[in-house]
Image (cartoon, rainbow, N blue to C red; front, side, top):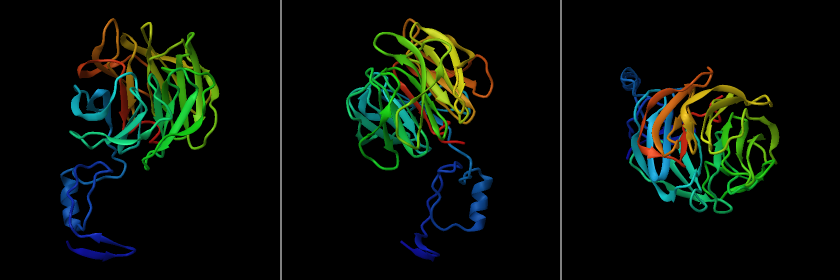
Length: 328
């Protein structure tokens, strides 16, 4: 292998062809300006600000994915190594997707680019958990509640290891839905063991401490799908089931407002978001469904059809590489 001395470092001169024009695509090695120009003309050179907007839906061990900027049916992605069947928690960086619990206490990670791959063990939660949700910014991944607990735990996504204690929710619950900006995480609704609640809590992701009261949803809700951009967090569906979508402005504590409706009343539904869209996957009416549908987060209104999952699924988790916790 040949090398060239560069200021401050030694890099390999061996070229690694980029696998796309997304900013996280590798294009290492030494390239001439003409070679870079040719790749740019072919839309195959990494461009700053051009993020991969991939949504991945996991149920059991099976993953499937969509490009959030398009409309289409989902495509087989790859597999989890540990089964996660009962509403595991999900969170993500721009490069890695994480699935925690669902069956046991295992945290798994897999690269968004790893189509056809399998997940790796990342670490463990403090206990076996299911029926809970996750959120993240670019540094921390956070899990909220589960098994009617007040637990909030976090990991540093760049470093494999076990989860650490973050603080506590204002009331113990499971089946809440979550959203995030780059600074705040919100937990919406849930089930306390005695009742479904309309509680909204928030935390500051970069610190540790107990959650604070944010406001209330427009109706009690659990087993909803939550998604967000950096400004708004949306929640859709509930046990009942329900077709209600409501939203909050993450920076301003207060009660939720009506956003629009899902195509049908659903529970056990999952959601993820891109730069501008919120997407809901699967769920249950009288039985599991395979529907994927979306909204434009900045505009209130009802969902639009996106496509279909490979098969009908509920009690799953969805994550994305361009959600509100990552993009200001």
